[in-house]
Picture 1 (cartoon, helix red, strand yellow):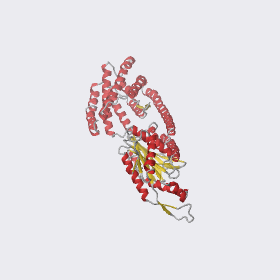
Picture 2 (cartoon, rainbow, N blue to C red):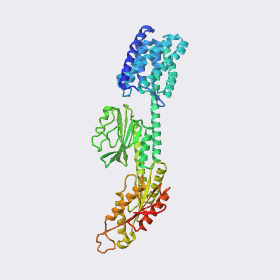
Picture 3 (cartoon, rainbow, N blue to C red):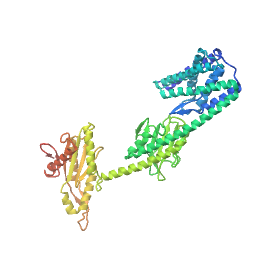
Picture 4 (cartoon, helix red, strand yellow):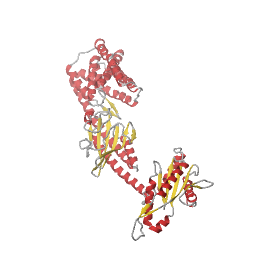
Length: 574
């Protein structure tokens, strides 16, 4: 792939070796017929209007100027066609939304059109074609070869240019087919305009030119309407896909993944508007990678009144100059246009969707309504996902200690066993622990005091939870640690630290059974059991059972306040 500066220099040199020589050859070596100023003026107007009305067929943009260019060539010759084509090219460049430098685009397109013009004219005259001829057979047969040559050279040179730009041949078969089809459709209009102009003069240009422009306008309106219909249909599909996701993160990922089917963008950001002042990135899509980490854009942590983010309406910033209105957001250098849309639920703005593009004016006004609908889908789906996750959390959480319950313990243990079997983790250890003489605590101080002890033990145990570790209340006064990627000896060390910590720390309670309700300090000990995969178990059920055995035999039956370590032959205690 050639760097941009070198490519620009090559195109300028190519232009120097094409445009002046082609102009010279066209003037001195190809026939030129007298030009009717009035006719040329009308043709220029028609040509300019046609260039401003390109057609879109199945996502391929096709310009329709050839029907006039072919006519000009048949009527006046290469030089006039060459000059008009250069003029048409300038009109096209001025109306194009590309962010490429205007002068660079001029050299590229001027060079390509120069070679296309002289190459197709050479084929026409080599086959015996004569400009100004009224022989319909000659113009029809040789003319169609000329038209196909014109299209073929143009496509070939574009492939060469794309190769130098990207480093590979980009064979866009669909667009080439459309170019050929459009040439076939336009050629009858060209020869009709040519023969009518030769017979009726300027009136013929108006007779066929105005209806053709009206046809283009109506077709574009139909395409726009059809495009809107397709986008609304895609938006509906996206809404259904969001409804299929139950998790909060799944909804965000599904939204960004499917959004490009509806709105074309380069970068996308879903921003949470927390506490009606903080801006927190929830998820973004940059370089087709969905991530929580923002790299291409700098978004402030606080929303300011004058930051350009509208709380109520979708706004389009069509050019790089307009994006300055988003004062505190800094985009990557190639961003040319931006659209921001508030995510509103029940009249309250809860976040923002920000889309960027490397092209100017890419976001259309009718897409604002589509984004409003999409953000509505997103807001509703996120509420549902959050409700679902909260429901799941409640169903898998111990109401008293707020730790994972037995249901969650079973699910997580199965997940970790699968990870071990897949080779994602090397070890899987478990610590099961039980409060010694817990029944005596309940009998002496009351069940509420017992519950207080359970909660304080749970808080203490949370201090031993590291990333990836699961702590759950097994039932009653029993708790379990699941320790992925911890070898058995590491789990024993952790169990001993837990035992020692609890032994040394008094737990202050207010006895329910005391009339004075005077706070007292209670000393507690734990009995613990350790087992591990692959040493002691081959499945989740065995791991849980053997940890329990280690706790009772090596812990409680050995005198309590001990760590039992499972061994198939002999359960040891420490």
